[in-house]
Image (cartoon, rainbow, N blue to C red; front, side, top):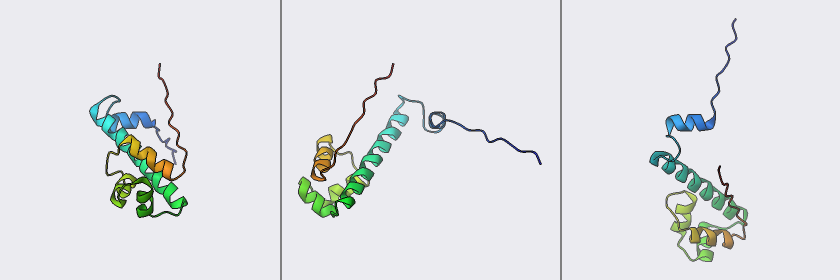
Length: 102
């Protein structure tokens, strides 16, 4: 029996092909949604580790439970200030990396 080799592709090549090249509107939208998803998951995980409900976290931040739910489920474009307040209320350190290319 002949063994076939599996062809592999880089994530960048697959994303370029199926989502769009970098710096295109479709790719920018995809990457923005991905970042919101990661932030929402980080908020949810930190909230649960602090044993807080969405209502309790909302009270600490000064927003309604629905706003916390929307953040966690990446259903809204939150203001950066609100995201920072959420992490501060969770007593969580956040890091943003800026990488200069070329």
